[in-house]
Structures are given as structure tokens and as C-alpha cells.
Image 1 (cartoon, each protein chain N blue to C red):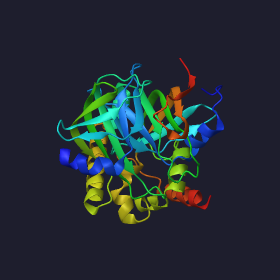
Image 2 (image 1 turned 90 degrees about the vertical axis):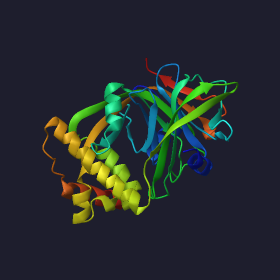
Image 3 (image 1 turned 120 degrees about the horizontal axis):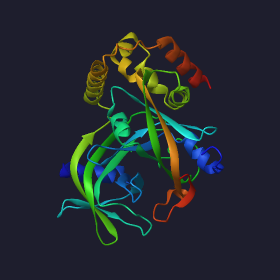
Image 4 (image 1 turned 60 degrees about the vertical axis):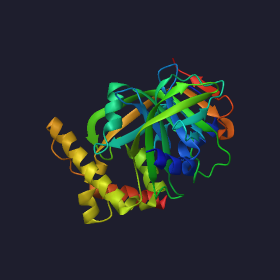
Length: 145
Length: 166
């Protein structure tokens, strides 16, 4: 995973850094982590105003173009420790998200269909019928507006 | 929230940013964040979002722990010049009902307007067969508790606190 982060994090910076604040709510901000190759951690500058809890945290990297297309994204799960004027992020898991390759798109369709089937089966629900004419009409109106 | 005065520059962010980074809290306490599109209902003072039952993890997280946040930090294509970055923390409620359009009109209108290529998810018989799960949606309502913003998106400075609803 580390080699992947070395390549991808600079390309997506500033990335979205997510932790839990003193109120127990998620807190997110943009930052440019420094990749510490020796320790295999990411060092995130800590401003005085930040009141984040040590522990579980994550990074989100994502991209879209001007037409909200060509979407790419991934999440890095990990935890933070509080250092001197910095948060030290220890990455533990890479979670792939959106992607533009054919392989990515096939995976999204397969996983989406499978998860939806399980969701319905678990609750004993019939597969909902999609009102396609309404969807298409709404799309057309939005594009014309 | 509906009685609170939200400055126009913040409303412009809510209405024009293409995405917001939505965080929910996983079972092990990790904030997991993905980009989504939301609609802000100014009258009710709530955000409307949704997720497909084909991607239900954020709904599971919110049902377990309603604490969420929305970070508006990607101004691309918004048409806004030097907009602030805005963080909304609040409580989410996820509908049990599966719907496609009803109650979600404002979100679909934004997505279909902002994302012309979204036609790929419904434009052919094959896509309608493969992607029907994409349109099986759970409605998410987010009631803001705290709003902070950073002028010019400068996170090195302390944010301004817009409001707090206890």
C-alpha cells in the first residue's frame, strides 16, 4: 500500500483529512500530508484551532472534471496520533472507489447489483420497479434548464 | 436552522458546488468519507442526500451513529470565485423506504443538470438492466448542528463559526 500512496497522494493533494473532533462528530479539512518514507506515516500540519481526537481517521482523495464526470476516488483508512504541531497518520487500509477504467466500471456494476440483491433479500423485499419514464423526463428537463 | 441567517456566499457554496465530502462513522469509529451531491432546502434548513442500496454502507453507519459531516471544499465548475470552504456537522436520518424520485427531486435535478453523462445510467435498455440498483435509493436528511467556514478555502487559518444549534 505504501508505494501506492507515494504515487497517488501527491497527485491528489490537497487531500481530504477526516478525524473525530472533541464533540464526537466527524471533522474534515483539506491538507497536504508529508509522506515520511522512513516511518511509513503521513505527517499533517496541526493548526492551533484543531481539536481532534487521537485514534481512527481517514483520507479521501477524489477527482471530477468540469462536467462532474471521469470520477476517481479512494479512501485510506488509518489512525492518528497527536504529535508536536502535527498529526501523524498511520495508514492501514486502501479502499478503492470510483474509477474510469472498464475494469473499474464492471466491478462497480457487479458489486452494486450484488449488494442491492442482498439488501432486498435480507428484508424480504421485492425488487423495486424503476419509473424509467420519469427518470428520463427529469433528466431531459434538467438538461434543458 | 430555518430561522438562522446563512450568508449568501455560504448558500452559493451549498447550491453550486458539484460535490461535498460526506463523512459517516464506521462500526470501528473510523470516519469514512466519500464525495456525494446534496441539495440544501433553505426553508427547512436541512440537506437532502441519498445513497443506493447497492452502496449501503454509509446508510448502515448513519443508522448506527447519526453523527455526520459535510465538507464543501471542491469548487471546480461551481462558477464561484474564491469561495469559502464550509464544514457542516449534523445528525443524519436515513429512510427505511426505498424510493427512486419521490422526496429526492432536488438532488436528482442537481445531478442531472451538473452531470450530462449520467444519461449513461439510464439511456439504453442494457444500462437500465445493469444499473437499476443505482436508482434504488434511501433518502438521507441531515440536520446541521454546527457550520464552520474558511474564507478563500484557507485551512491554515481558524474557521469562522456561522451558527450553532444545540
